[in-house]
Amino acid sequence: MIDVDLKVTQNKITALIGPSGCGKSTLLRVFNRMNDLIDGVRVTGNVKVGGEEILGEGTDLIALRKKVGMVFQRPNPFPLSIYENVVYGLRIHGVKDKKALDKAFERSLSSVLLFDELKDMQNDNALTLSLEQQQRLCIARLLSVVPDVLLMDEPCSALDPLATMRIEELMIELKKQYSIVIVTHNMQQAARISDDCGYMLLGELVEFGETKQIFTTPGDKRTEDYITGRFG
Amino acid sequence: MFSDGREHFQRELQRLNDLILKMGAMVEKSIYNSVEALKKNNPKLAKEVVGTDDAIDKVELEIDELCLELLATQQPMAVDLRFITTGMRVGSDLERIGDLSVDIAQRAVELSEQPLLKPLIDIPKMAELAEKMVHKALDSFVKRDANLARSLWEDEAKADSYRDLVTDELTGIMSKDASTTSRALPLILIARHLERIADHATNVAEDVVYMVEGKVIKHGPK
Image (tube, rainbow over all chains, first blue to last red; front, side, top):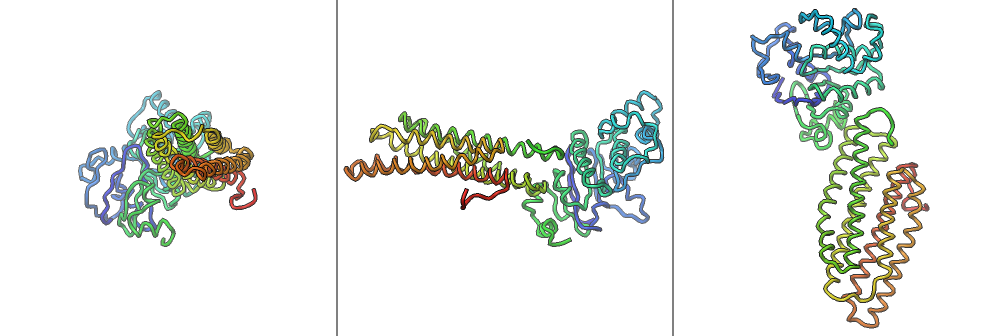
């Protein structure tokens, strides 16, 4: 990472765009310390989430990942029931009270607009759902532990255009309560849904600003070349 | 009014629609007041028209910015694309109408300093027609009604004849008595401004036909 300095604003969607291998997913994984899983990784700099430095050794990673949840490219529900998928995080964090779990189940699933659809089949295996439903379920699984930030790494790339549109609408709805960072190689998607946008190239954050500015009057020639399709 | 799905985008299109209507209402008021100021010999009202032009320009910039943003970020297609590009053009026509009303208001201030050359008959009628045309053009835009838009062609011809009538009459007066020039010329200009307003309203109507039917009808047989 070179010269990365950005602020993810509360209740906004921040998108990271750039060609493959530019480091956007790596940057995303900085925010919940997922890069720690890579052997020999070296991290310098400062990252604050809600005012707290998260790169320090004393950081409680479990608490951090509760606060900063992540959705991946391919929906990855656990091979458990729909209900157990949603309340999984709460169980891990020691919640046993059935009423509390039920409440979180309804709240989380409602937030991703799946509750009415799935409430009568909550004991079915989550893997029987459509890809879009699975992705929504994975988002609901994060919401059950009430995070502050949602990290999304290409959340629509396994979905068809209609499902993509619906997930995009969901993200715009979710930003009222959460701050969202999305990595996407679909530049149009970033343009459509994000409020702020960063363009990365070879590990460098070339430009970061309001999405409408980036897509109408980019300040850096490299950004302009990328978004006009002259490069990448 | 707009298709289902992409709610956020639909809301933005609705916002564009509302901005255009807001601007339309502002320029309609400007036309009306500029001619009222002339009729009632009320320079204060005329100056008010001049004063509101900045606010009209500001809405035009807002419309431009929103259209540009939607084009850049939302990949509008087909009817949405036509709506947004039409929105930009309508904004620019309305802005010109606003400017022309300011021109009329300025002439009204000039004329207020001396007695009217003759009672105003055709100019108020022409102003009413121009104002009606702007209203109708915007109505056709809101209702996506190409037939209503087409009804402006007839009005435009009427506006042209009013302008000719006023110009002929006043040049007649001037040629008989050159001392009337300073009072006649501003009235000729006002008739010209009103006719230009009617033209801009017609442009809006042509854009509406394009937006609704996808047919380009300007510069050719309608």
